[in-house]
Amino acid sequence: MKELNKLYCNPEKLTVRPVNKSVAKDIIVNNHYSGIWTKVSYALGLFYTSDDQHQFFSGVNEKLIGIACYGDPIGRHSGASISEQLDRTEVLELTRLFVFDGYGSNIESWFVGQSFKWLKENAPHIRALISYSDPSKGHLGQIYQATNWIYQKNIKTNTSFSFKWEEDGKWQHERTIAPYYGTISPAKIQTIISKPFWVRVEPHKHRYIYILGTDKKDRKQLLKSLKHPNYPYPKILNQYEEKIIKLEPVERSK
Image (cartoon, rainbow, N blue to C red):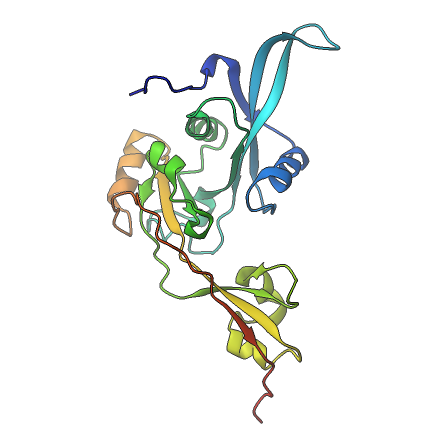
């Protein structure tokens, strides 16, 4: 139900279609809170059509106001982590979402809903979606809640880390450094490198899934076969305290 005195988006002025990944990257790197590009399979743009005459051409102005990026989820068991009936090639992760302000309070949820329709029409092999919200960034996943994703808390039980190799350097997630060191264990890395490094404990993220299905029957079967239970949406943001540890190199035992 719409609230009084609240500005909502006008769908008649909005369209969704693919954009070049370089265009999407520029907007995400310069405007998304992460400031980081990632692997992307589909980059969708949200376009706003104004009633103003184009400055140089005949017709109306059309402006790119948002980006939604879907990519392959990390982990070969990402499909099975949702349902044993899913292969990882049938799952995408919503990796980035950004919309400029000023186009309506519900613009992001409308955009996400339209991205579902686009995927069903243009990537019919995709049967499920997964995404995460980061509580350390102040995100509970309100957009996922508004578009009826299923909330599964976080199924990871182990601790995740980020690393940096200089005190004023940039943080790298453990997934990034694993290929270089053959491990994500801080204790093992202490025996590999010869200088101090810093480790940050990463908070567990909120996990959301959305079942597209190839049709209504397939969607119903997948919903029945979910590997993990669903939970009520989180509404309160718990306080997050950043924990950073400086580790010194350790001589490998002989």
